[in-house]
Each structure stands twice: as structure tokens, then as C-alpha cells.
Length: 405
Ligand SMILES: NC(=O)c1ccc[n+]([C@@H]2O[C@H](COP(=O)([O-])OP(=O)(O)OC[C@H]3O[C@@H](n4cnc5c(N)ncnc54)[C@H](OP(=O)(O)O)[C@@H]3O)[C@@H](O)[C@H]2O)c1
Image (cartoon, rainbow, N blue to C red; front, top):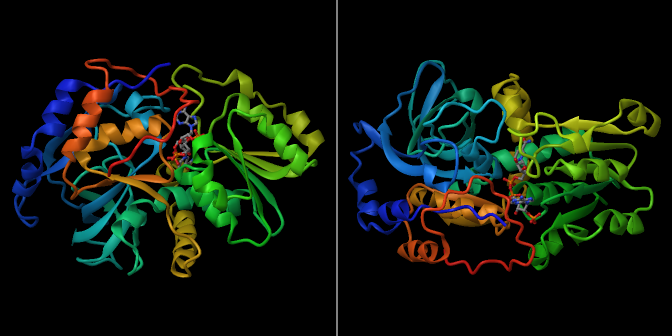
């Protein structure tokens, strides 16, 4: 069982150094600072490729706003990026992160609708894990007055992806049934909440056993990912389910398709179980189109980041975001936050996702100082100098880690 290694030298440098907090304080006043702190991925690989460094202060170009970041979302995808385990990985060094929130600090030309002082959340095509970001207004959304920065950092990616899959790809309607993998994760919990906004929807959640007590009220039925959940679901719904949301791929694809009702929709939206750089095509999930035709099944894919940054889908996303913000204001949805971490604690945060420990979303809180106790914890549990590339630990017997944040 592989475990992500944590480089002890770096931990000492970034986690235990009590000056780390002061470094943040010493950054010049926002208006004239030439530098800012950011998480930098020096190269693809293990946790020791991550560090917090000073970077040149970005300035907004035409159509962009400059945001003083308060908090950033940490997603499973960020672990895959760290490993270079994505399609067409960008060049390193890079600043990771696809979403953040904060306060607009300046605006360039052609940024109508936004002004200095606005509280906003934003998608970025990398570069989100920094004290300051600049991004086109097409990817920026105003936060509701009562939304906290922690909630905003946990909102955009998970809820927009969940909403578009359920309502725009699969047309979720009253009385339908939905099966979702990783139900205790950030996307899984967003899916469960959105399903509860439609009458009489049955949600089957698959998750590690130790999460069941915490999340059982968010779904209708919950199964351990190591049980034969296909048979369990069929005992309840002999005809199968209307929608399967699969973020695992691999052997799950065939199993999930077998569980679909006629006219049911299977959506692949992640590849946790697959290594894209090794498998250009996944042999276990070959689909025969004739069988789809004969069985009346729909197979779909969804990638929010591709829709936003490669396929010009920002208006579609904006309209989904408007509906989600309305649901938030009606108090029908609320992001589930697992834990907050300082930028300097990004390695520990990633380790927590890798270890399947999170329930809901992990947040990088830009104003948080690293917790010395965490440094000691990480020192005790990490193997010095080991650099492990694959997050593949199968922590079947793992209990939820005691959590001290
Ligand atoms: N397509 C899109 O637009 C889009 C947008 C956002 C996220 N995603 C995808 O959605 C999935 C969930 O993302 P998230 O950020 O919300 O993560 P998450 O669900 O909060 O955390 C990952 C969870 O995945 C499960 N898991 C299954 N196999 C695992 C493995 N080998 N290693 C670690 N965890 C494993 C674990 O839950 P259990 O042990 O309980 O199963 C773990 O807690 C990811 O595949 C991500 O790439 C896609």
C-alpha cells in the first residue's frame, strides 16, 4: 500500500518555522506590494514538490479584476495535477488551484458590473492558490451577503458540477433515483443536497464505511464501497436507477451501466481509479454503442473546467451559478466544509484527501497561520525523504483521523 511521502526537510522549513506566520504579515501593504505568497508546484510528483514562495504581484489586464484572495478550494483534481496525472499537463513550475474567493482590489477596463470592494468567488485555469489573483470577469461571481469566504471557497466547483450533471445532462426530475460514488466528498455532498431540492428523489450513496454515520442523513441509502453495492441497490430498485454519477471510472463503469434503467443516464465526471498518463484508453470501460441502442441507455461525460476554459461555456456556467445562488439564498443548499488549512499546510491537506479522510470540502485559508501541532503530527506520521507519486492507498480499515483544526 503506497502512501504519499512528505519531505521532512520541507516540513521543517515551512511548517515548524515560527517565522512563517510573520512572513505573511511582512508582505507590503496591498496597494503597493510588488510580491505575494503563493503555493508553487515545482515539478510533477509527490508532496515534496509543493512549497510556498514569493511571486511577482499580478496586475489585471483588459477585462480582468484583481482579487485579494481570502480562501481557496482544494479538490481531488489538485492531487492529480500535482502528479501530472491529467491530460496535457501544463509546464511546471506552476501555481495550482482552480477556485478561490476574496475581495476585488482593482479593476481593469471592460469589467462592467464589478467594482473595488466586491466580495467575489472565481474560477481560474490554475493560479488560484495565491494571495492575489487576476482573472477575466467571465469567471467571477458576486457572493451573497451572508455567504462566508469559507463557504464561497467550497461552493463553486462542486455545486456547479453537481448542478449541471443532475439538471442539465441528466434532467433530474421528481421521483427519480440517483447513485453517487464518493458520497461523503465535496461533490458527493453537493449532489446529495441538490437531489433533496427535488421531491421524492432516492439517493444511493457509496462511501467508505467510517463516513456513514456522518452522512447517512444526506442520502436515502448508503453502502460501503467494498460491498456488492450493485446487488444491494437492485434489492431496493429491481429495475435499476435513473442516474449514475461516476467519478471512479475503470471497473465501475461497466457495473454502473448494468445498474441503469432504460432511458437512464450514466455520467463519468472523474477518473480517481485510473491513471490517465498510463492508460490512454481504459480497457475496462469499453462501451458497445449497439448495446446502448438496444438497452436504451445514455452515457455522458462532464468536465466543468473543460467547459469553462476550453469550450467557451462561461454563459452556461453563469446561468447554473445564478440558480445555485438562489438556492443558497433560500437556504436549500449549503456547502459542507471538512477543514481549513494554511497555505503552508497544503501537503497535510492533500494527504487528508488521499487518505479518504475528508467529509466535504478542504479549504486553504490564506490568512491562517500554520498550526505548529500539525507540523509535529506530520513529522510523526510521515516517512522522511520518501517521495511517492501515486495517491493509491487503500485505507479499507482506516478510521477517521483525529482532527485538530
Ligand atoms: N468533472 C468535473 O467537472 C468535476 C468537478 C469537480 C470534481 N470532479 C471529480 O469528482 C471527484 C470527487 O472530487 P472531490 O474534490 O469532491 O473529492 P472528494 O470526493 O472530496 O474526495 C475524494 C474521495 O474519493 C474517494 N476515493 C475513491 N477512490 C479513491 C482513491 N484511490 N484515493 C482517494 N480517494 C478515493 C474517497 O471517498 P470514499 O472512500 O468514501 O469512496 C475520497 O474521500 C474527483 O474525481 C474529481 O476529479 C469532477
